[in-house]
Every structure is written in structure tokens, then in C-alpha cells.
Image (spheres, rainbow, N blue to C red):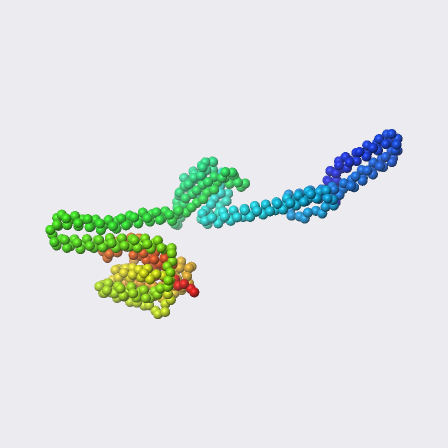
Length: 462
């Protein structure tokens, strides 16, 4: 059925098609060929018949127009059933248009979802900004750092770094992109590199620029560590070199003919040269270990056998200080994945430290056990591990120094360490070797009672 609105639009077409017969009837009446009554009746019949003939076509056009309006509003509806074939091509074209529109809509929806997922999943904090410097949108990484309620906030409310805000204002005014580095204070200060880029066209939501933050804290720390390493290494080498040069100059000058001075100075020179040799060897060793730290070693190794071999090799050194090495190594410990020489170096360094810093006449206890009670960071990667503990009865270490013990060249008592022949790299080597074996080193100490160094080596489950 056609709508009344459409019927009114149909009237001019009916009138136009009825005009020629109407003119004929008027001429026939004028020439007296037909009476007025029959002429009027014929005219009415012509108009009515024309309207009846056009009604199905008008109905089809009205249905197709309604169908097109529903599609325009995004309403999915079935195509109308046509009464004539006149508008079938129009309906076919609309159907094709509907399919193309649906395919394009699905494609755009998929693309938008992908871009949304990509924006959300990027690890660096991202902000979309409008011309008023307000945040239009922020990704998940940004919300984790700055909180969830970010949309609509002025960037200055989050980041109060003047150089960053000035660079942002320049970009929002149409200038080229810019980079700014700034520090974000907190419980742990973090360094960021901010990158600002304008869009060639404003988005429908008002976005005109994007701000990305890249965490460069680790890079800054590495640069500082490198600088500290060079400074420390230079200092450690400069001291024995200065001693050697001083004694050489003395032996070539005032003490040229002093045999007693020769003997005394040569002994000191040998000691200093040996210290430099140990330092260079440890530096090269540490560099090699760090190079391979991210590659886990292959092969299965018996930890108890390695510990016994290390203890046997240091028996003489222990005897010189009237110390004993006590072993508590149960039978049947499962093997661990690792290299024998590297595991031997771990326990060699730990036992050597225990002998150096333990009290003369005391005992060094080395124990091993299979345990499921693991440190938190290791428990996330393994269920069981072999824990090898080296316990001394030395002076102990203050708690505030424990986190720094594995740093390069860090010494609690630098003078005593040098006197005992330490290079300050032994525990750093231990830490990196344990990391290479995917294990963990823990340190406990009580002042006046001694220290315990425990190495956890994970067991691979079958």
C-alpha cells in the first residue's frame, strides 16, 4: 500500500497522462460530436484508469524509497517484494550498494579495532593532544604510570617540566616535531625522552598531535655505570702503577747500589704487579661473562662434586689461617644445567672470600640442599632448586651495604680488601655467572657473627 504522501506526489503524473484524452473529449464536445455528460464520464474514467494503472508502480517506488531510507539510518531490513519490474534495477542497485556498504563498514570497523588495539598495546606511554593542550586519549601504558582519569586533562597537570610544555606548545601551534628529555620524580626517579609530532590534519575528535614517552632510565644508568667503571678501573690500575714507577725511579737513582733496598722494593713491585695482573684478568673474565650472560649454558653438572673439588683446592689456604672447611653435601642431589668451570668459579670466589674475611681459627661451612623454598623472583621461573650456602664467622657486613656488594669495585673496607689482594670484582663475577645459569644469589649477614652467601641453581623438571 502506498502512503498518502506518495499518492499526492502521484497526482501530477496522473494529471499529465490524462491531459491528452481530456483535450480530445473537450474538442468532441465543442464540435457537438459528443454530449457533455458522456464526455465528462469518459474523462473521469480515463483519469481513474490512469491512476489505477500507475498505483502498483507508485507503490513499488514508495517501498524502495522507504527501504533506502532504512538503509541510510543503518537499519538492517529485508528488501521489499515488488509488484512490477519497472524499479527492479533500482532495487538491485540498492542491494549491491548495501553489500558494498556492509563490506566497507566491516573493513573500517576491523581497521579501527586494530588501530585501537595497537595504540593500547604499545609499551611506551602515548598521549593524543588537541590544540588546547588537553589529552584527548591515552594508552594503557600511560594510564599505568599517570592514573586512569586522563582524558580531558591539561598536559601540564601531569608533566610540569617547563621545556616539555614549551615544546608541546610550539608543536600545537604548527611547528615541526620536537624531542625533550626530562626526569619524572617518584620513589625511583625515571628518565624519559619525550617525542612530539604534529598531525597533517586534525582528527574528528580534535587530535592535532601525539606525544610519546620512552623510558631511558636503563640507558642513563648504563652510561653512569660505564663512566663509574672506567673511573674505578683507572683508579685501581693507577695506584699500583704509581708504586711501580716510584720504586723503579728509586732503584735507578738513590738506591742503585743498595742491595737491601733492591730486595725489599722488588718484593713490593712483584706484589703490585701481581695485583694489576689479577685485576686485568678479572676485568677480562667479567667482560667475557657479561657477553654470554643472556645465553644459558648446556649440559648437566653435579654440584656436590664441584664443591668438593673447590674445597680440596683451598685446604692449604685454609690451613695457613688455622681454619677448617666443613662440608654438608647430601647424597643423591639432582644435577643442574650448567658449565663445570663457571660453577667452579662461583664457589671458588665465594669460598675464597670466606677464607679472607673469616676470623682466623674459625670454620667455614658449606652446605647444599634441594629446596622448593625459593626467593620470590626465582619462584616465578622454577619449582625447585639446589641451594648451596657458604657461611663464614667473620666480622659481618652492615645491612645498608648488602645491596651493593655485587657492584664492580665496591668494597666495605677498601684498604683491607686491597691488603688481602682483592680486586673488587669477585662478587660481581659471581652475580653474572649465577644470572647466566638462571639462578639467584642471596646474602645475609649479622655484624659480629658472620655472613652467608647462598646460590640457588634451578632444577629443570622433566
